[in-house]
Length: 333
Image (tube, rainbow, N blue to C red; front, side, top):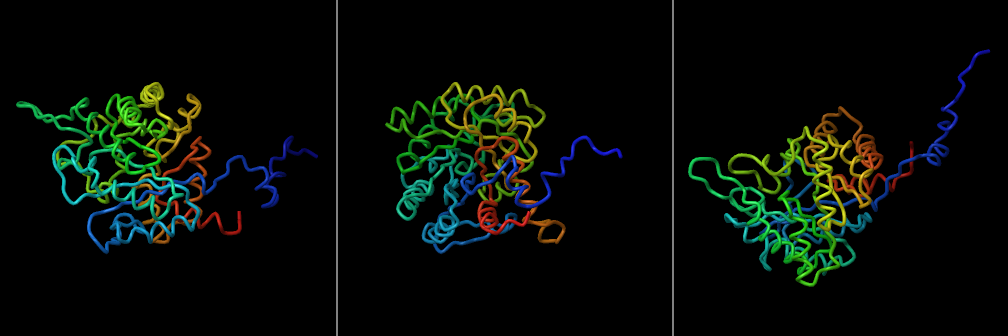
């Protein structure tokens, strides 16, 4: 009787056996949960395009911190929504800025929670760009790379002074890692690591985040400093620059459409690789689940597994609390 030479199904015959031979595993320790803090009081305001994600005022932030720590999530990524903005994003580096005050509060209320500070200017500038805008007489304004670096350094140092455990610059200015590393070292923060948004694409997947952070550009777009979605080899050049300049970890953003880039960085460099499961990736799943079109839990866990399989060591995701809950449930796979 003829039969298959190899019977691969033998190792799939039971849940126990499948669990034992699984190549890729997911843990709560892989997760970083983004949080938006805003000026004001008594604010717990759901972001319409991101169901389950909220703006928090500092007087209510402890509610979110308690839930995050109870679920065992080890780290958060902090974004601030200021009350006032100006052309240079001054409040991004003020001691009394919303992010700096939030960091100090988190370190008081949840000292074991790792605080990752997003280091950018777009939420704090009145024009919505990630740096200093340079005006031109006969053509559209542009972002001044080197002038922006000075403000980004001040922002990173102020975040470290407030108690941030990790600085995560997301601005995509040339030379930003070297500038921030030098600034942190000179200020006495040699031990504070940099999680670089090394490969950040000019993506259509950021829409809900820009609603949440109130950071949409008021003119033009960000294609002169964020990467073209059609480029892969450029990602290696960007990442290599950050490695040489002193990055401790590398990030790819967005996630799902760029799993090939995650794998490229994992294979090419020996630093930890993070992936950002961004706002539209989150919103699409939530919308489909609300309409009953998908099994939300199964899709989320499959997505997280895909990130890990592609090579991600860390996953920044708005699903972090959902994933943490799912991982506590008895396995039914």
